[in-house]
Image (cartoon, rainbow, N blue to C red; front, top):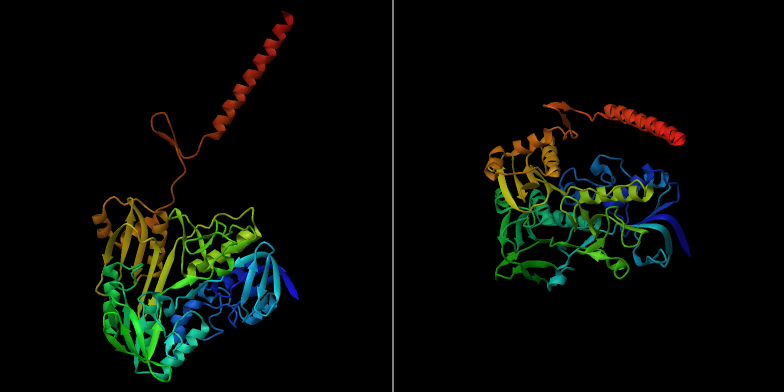
Length: 478
């Protein structure tokens, strides 16, 4: 038994929801699109899991954060998919994919065929066992990647309120979960091997601000070491976290956020892989013309970097999904995906945004005592990255626009002096005027003098024709 669809989206995360909405906007017919997902619910905004979902009061719950509310778009509930004739195959794992034959085989033995496939399989959380540490199956050890993980963490926080929580990892998940654990009245200790939190993005100065803020909320930091083992009681529950430096931390709840790995295994040996993801072109099209990849699993050309990268963030997932659908539906009109990398986070009363690339010389600016502050990154005398904490909507838009424009920066000290004002000024400049022609002694023509050129051309052509007529008559006389 099998079914056939014109379009199939493999994966039910953020990208799948945004792709589905884009398909409907472009007029697909009922029965043409199928979404296959291992999760039991339609696509939802995954960032909610580490934010609103973990709040002790007025917590976010489905259906409130189904896609595409994260971008202030329509909320795609199960009813919406039914009304638009989109087939949802939920709670289903795909065992194998044959891109040559354009078929997928599900765990239940059903074969689903397609004409165009969008891979939106995302990534999975790295497990402790991959680093030689046992204990992931302990009842109070949590990861946070899907709705089931989030529900498990909520139950643990409720049952161990006032207890000790240890967060393994100092990245996105670690920082956001630590904030939620504190709000749920737990004593929190963060453990990570780097010198400071968010080491892949933050400078030491930026990280210091956030670490001090977290400390003021009661969070403790143990840096420069890693987890080596757990103490586990007879009930299979972790009671202590043992670190490589010889110290031990009591634990009622353990949250692990040590990175992710793209889900590419179904396509190894069938599609070109690069930098851990499925390599695609500027239309999100893979090495097989009938297969596209979007979100965390895709390695795509980032124009502002001049190279291909794989980006792990919800904004990239949303926009790459929409672009892929546009390229599929209007192949001859779709341009290249021109994406400006964007990352953000909101914890406690803090909110920051980052655009571009954190490479080159860094220039800090603003009030690091608790006001608005940020940083610029300058490479080859051009702005390539911008970070801002505590900005207004207009200020965030300004740093985004300035970063995309990549203005020249000749003096780093002057850039520091101007601070946020530099980005605001650059963003407010009018776009460059078209080339201007100068005639004679300083007369500037804002537009090319096409009319004059045309008149001169007509006169010249008439003269040539008259001469040819006269010369022909003379030849006949001779």
